[in-house]
Image (cartoon, rainbow, N blue to C red; front, side, top):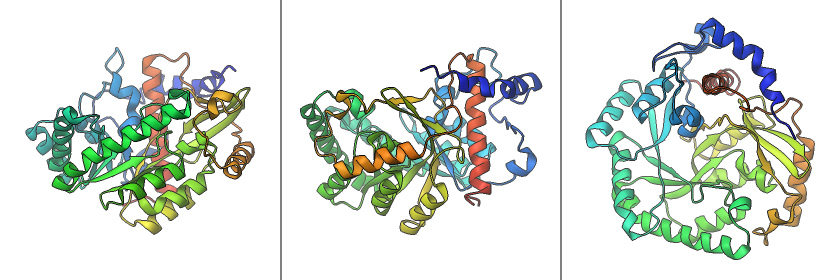
Length: 368
């Protein structure tokens, strides 16, 4: 299926943005994208997950009109300029001085900081984990988000045994991490990162039963497991320290369905209800926007290989999930970066983020 039609839907607006100079040079740029001063004046309680700037973290554009982020402080400064309440970002290779700079800016602007960290893969990796944990703590973080799998369960593993080995290794990694968390009194928030079903993650939490081990609740990922998103939210919110707040677009294709992050309010999730449920269970919970600008992801649940690691998946839940997907098809084409220049990708990424903040402040009332 050809997906680039979405890009054409945005082409006229992209051309306007580029030709009018709506994106200006410098890390302090504030791209209004039609929202004006009224939008920028509203500081949100919502923050930004580093993955929302996946394109900009990799590099800027050749003209340097939109420079890439070189470090977390640059991202923090930029996110503050568009009204964010904080960021969730990695603390790898931070010096004590750099952690202090992040803390000073964060405190001066009343921003929050959450870390994002890879679990220690073996005993030799513990030193790296400890250094990053300490760096995040010194900068003011109280929560570290982690993911046990970097890919997607239905793509990474071909057998149930392979997934079982992954699960046992993940348990060992968390066991290694806990003494470090206890030393620095930081919470570990495990994301449902297209690895754990709801039941998997609840069993993992039960296994550890530790006050410093909880959930980074991603509001859209488990749609790829055919789990109804509200079932995911209601099940995991009581254990959640933080979130990845996202909205999702869905389109059927021949082997299953396409799944795509879309700007908040443009997708199929009941965001107001999601926010309310999370706040009910944890009034201090942080909402980190995860708006990843990329081509749609394929969820090939019509293929046999998709099901190889889901031996214990509830048939009732799967049928309910399939029904939800069928009933929540997007009317618009899903976002795509196919055929865009690097500059256009950066503009599109920023536009998606700023539009999400506009919705968060106006519709979700995530305002300071």
